[in-house]
Length: 81
Image (cartoon, rainbow, N blue to C red):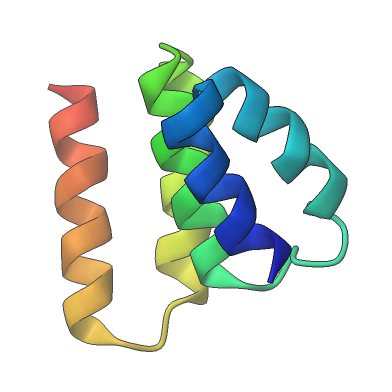
């Protein structure tokens, strides 16, 4: 899947390059929580805090798993300080 490839790309070429790839997937994966979680993490890594927070919020809203929502909420809350 291209989402997995983009996440791996972040480790090789950096989060900025991976964000470019994720932008290409945004429409197709708009309702997929893992896309928004990955997007949030990459945005956080490049210092785009407001956008990362919004992406975490979207991932949380789409997740059906309480444990996953708690994990994502914790990441978002740490980002906000």
